[in-house]
Image 1 (cartoon, each protein chain N blue to C red):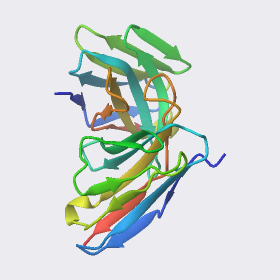
Image 2 (tube, chains in turn green, cyan):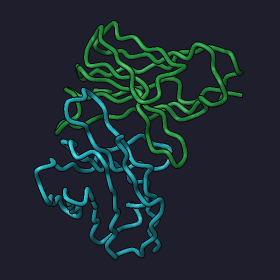
Image 3 (cartoon, rainbow over the protein chains, first blue to last red):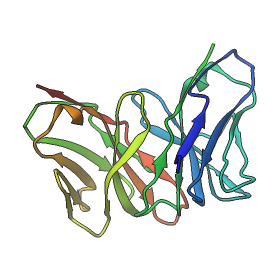
Length: 114
Length: 112
């Protein structure tokens, strides 16, 4: 198993550009989520999905869209990038909603918006 | 609202014990977690404790939970230089599908 994979690892955007951060898992996990990590603020939940076709907002959803057409993939879209979206983005997956099951994190995407 | 607080930095000498502390506000938390993040990497789950437990031990790691004070701690015995990393405390909220609240992270520096 490859686990949770994220692409790209690094990305630089100009303000107003759009892009999609990719996340995939090959463990048949139902639950997937996106976090952003900023210095001194820990991880904050952007969006999450409890299964294919079902998504919901987390703590900081503004400026981001998600969809979950398959169990494996959970892309995060930035429609019009802003400097405030400069951050490290982590995708995670888990067999069920958070509990005793391990939540697996991807390696992260470091995004800079100029 | 929900909030998780940690001190930002801890420095210890190799071989000493490290104690990383965390406080949380939501009394309905079901599980509390400790994650480790090494430079440039994602988060790795170290251990977790169910909210009806007081203590959990796993090799060099001991987790203590004081529900009355809403205080969680992670003790690392015989700390090694390889333990240098950022440690995050997190809680899951009862009845809220999929939401984890993370603390700001504690940077552990282990001096040889």
